[in-house]
Amino acid sequence: MRAVIFSGGISLVIALLGTPLFIRYLTRHQYGQFIRHDGPASHLVKRGTPTMGGVVIILALLAGWLGGNFLTGRTPYASSMLVVFLIVGLGFVGFLDDYIKIRQERSLGLRARWKILGQAVVGISFGVLALQFPNEHGDAPASTAISFLRDTVIDLAYWGPAVGLILFIIWSNFLITAWSNAVNLTDGLDGLATGAALIFFGAYTLITIWQYNQWCGFTSASSQCYEVRDPRDLAILGAAIAGACFGFLWWNASPAKIFMGDTGSLALGGAIAGITIMSRTELLGVIIGGLFVIIVASSVIQIGWFKISGGKRVFKMAPLHHHFELMGWGEVTIVIRFWIIAALCAAVGGALFYAEWVATLPAGQ
Image (cartoon, rainbow, N blue to C red; front, side, top):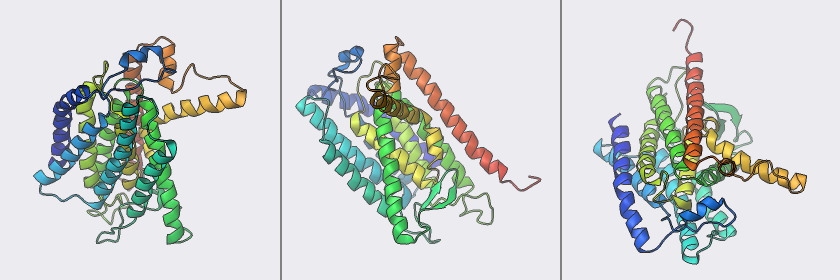
């Protein structure tokens, strides 16, 4: 898969070489991170660190995705184009949020209603478009069926196409919002979210390559084939995102020279949602991205118990990585151990994906 290799390689090199240039630009214009005073005291030394590094991630992955296709004479299909639309759209909302934080020197950027509105416009547009553009076989990029390892029998269009479209928009926007918030919450320690995203997209690159090798477009008679619209397209994009995260991680690892900001976290969250929807593995993504889910769950538990118990806490601070910081763990120790958890989640998800395929092999094979 030359396109996959080219895509990942180009985005890695651009992110690796382009990030220090962007750091110099941000430093020259004093575009630094504003640190909340209610967070861990150890984070106050990070005040002024350049942020909005998500701009580099987005530009690098776009260059890798386009370059991988161009160098192999391919034209991107609707599936990857829609995920890219989601990445760029949410990245722009995050950029506005980051820019306002920097200009006004406060930890809150866009007003909540405008941020929600921006995400809703991008998410709803994606939801509508994802069910359009059928190919020669009549397959749209996304499916109205809820998916795990493949589409399940739970079809949102059971009550008709119109209801199915509405329910799919709600479902897809739930996933987009959930994953965007998950990456945003995880981006609290140097390199944590970037490394976890690298592991996630590395795993999904392998999954979509496997889907392409077992694609129904090749072996439609096989009960094992995958009815994914454009699996190779998604593999190329997945490699581009993984490569961009890899290159950016060099500068984002502790001590971070730059933060991805909401520009990066919203874009990567949208990428996770988009690729899981297009590869028809929406619930599998919850397992492969288990670290993100654990971190979100820690915040939900903390807030819920605080309200129920009248002010008591389960953790010293949420999200979970801050709890371990206040327990005295070093930042690098937390990040590496959380990366190990992310890798284990990806391995478990990948094993389930492959085991399901093996289980469907005809007897004797």
